[in-house]
Amino acid sequence: MTLYSLLLTLPQEAATDVSMVNALVQRFNEGGDYMWPVLISLIIGLAIAFERIITLNRADINTRKFIVSVKGALEEGGISSAEEVCANTRGPVASVFQAGLLRHDEGIEAVEKAIVSYGSIEMSFLERGLVWLSLFISMAPMFGFLGTVVGMVEAFDAIEAAGDISPSLVAGGIKVALLTTVFGLITALILQFFYNYVVSKIDRIVIDMEEASIELIDSLILLRAGSPVGEKKD
Image (cartoon, rainbow, N blue to C red; front, top):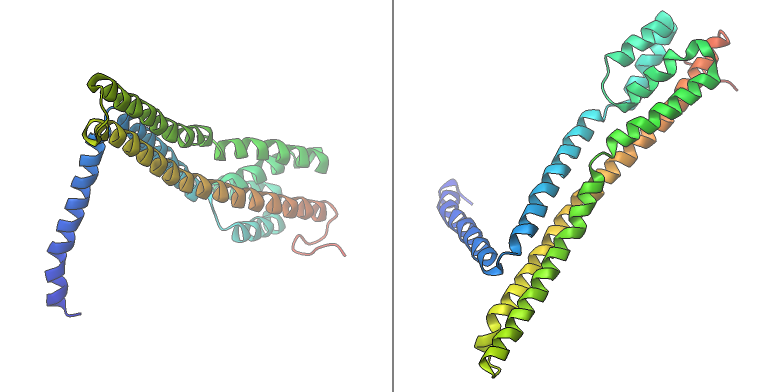
């Protein structure tokens, strides 16, 4: 495809996008008042999901590179040097490492308890907001189903008032019922996708944190025994 032909297709694609937006707005307006709770659920749910994604991406570091840096600091400068490396590194792994190193003087058992305690705290920070995201995933289709029930009641009210059944009488109520259901389910599907992505991201960070903590404890045991930190016991 030449550049000229590509430029010719751009206005057509833009017009198609505009027509799709107009169609969505029209369907939204036809859905009635119960479309607004669904839309609010989508907006708040996406805001929570994007905030979690940004926070988790900032918390995610190259764990292997960080462990190597901490081991090198332990060999060269001891505990204080390793604490400085942890303090200058963001993320839950570095925070857990620093909590363990601060208890080094109290023994390995104290280090393990500090790692477990601070690991639980960091995990709660990672999972913050997921309860609300799960709530909106559940509420969006419920609002849609509520609109469905209301739409069907309106349809039967129209039949009762007219004393006759005809497609024109019940079409409006049934349309409201179907539109609210569709938008509620679409909202739930979108939010569920982001929820699963966030949960999988948290699981990977937690696994890295647990594996790194084991390596830190092994390194501290070697350091107290006077062995090189980079080596492992047979």
